[in-house]
Length: 309
Image 1 (cartoon, rainbow, N blue to C red):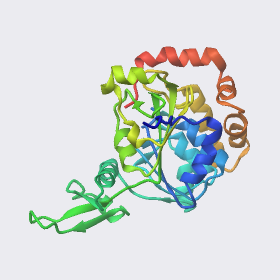
Image 2: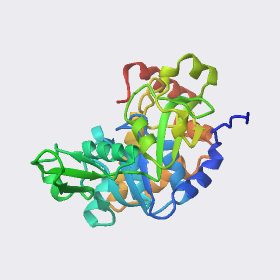
Image 3: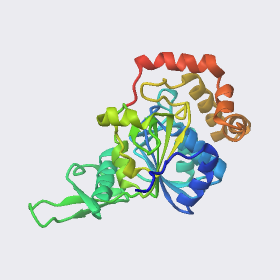
Image 4: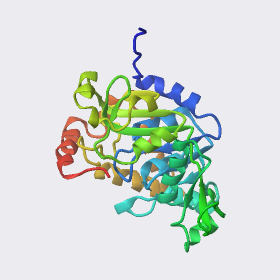
């Protein structure tokens, strides 16, 4: 019997993986929601790899990761139900790009995003929806078409299958074979099943024996995962379920730089990129730059009162 292969790759291998998975014009879907379980370490690698011309999907709420990808020119259009700085206001780079037409910000909502992923998972071209009736979204939604079904008697809306070329997901843990554990129990499992390829960052690699002891803890089975990279604090500045809370101080720093950039003064934003994206030699260098052991301990201590959704 052939030896089972590990799916773990090193962080240094991620840019090569990304260039192969995301050729010009690819669809990239980011996992997580708001400031929870966002694959921020992988997003930084997308920027380092110089990936361009992406169609970017995510949801329900997308934050600094989408704003930053738009700001560096990696995105041609977005299919995101919401892009926001949340408690810090609007997402300035995304908003400016949408208003000026440098990207196409498509009108799309979370129910239709889930329906499109479900269609891709089932291998069918579309998913019927009735809940869109009476909304103005049907007039602008690029993946939606009205049709008469063979049964029933009422017209429905068909949502085109959403099959991303790559899904990037962050989770607290996985084993070396790619069995992923995400305590938030969000829709990452559906995203993984719907996507052509799946890259997962995890805060830690756990022994395979732990997976066998508690198979019910696996939220994404290994069959859907192409590669896993161990990145401690890989969701930062977002939080990771059960591991650490979002870093609101760092997020405030990012959004201040983003706002300045959107207003035409690029110095703060370029300094942010140099310090946290382009400058770090490793994830451990990055961890020192965000405050080192003291700050990481504070974020871990705060995790008990916070959970990703």
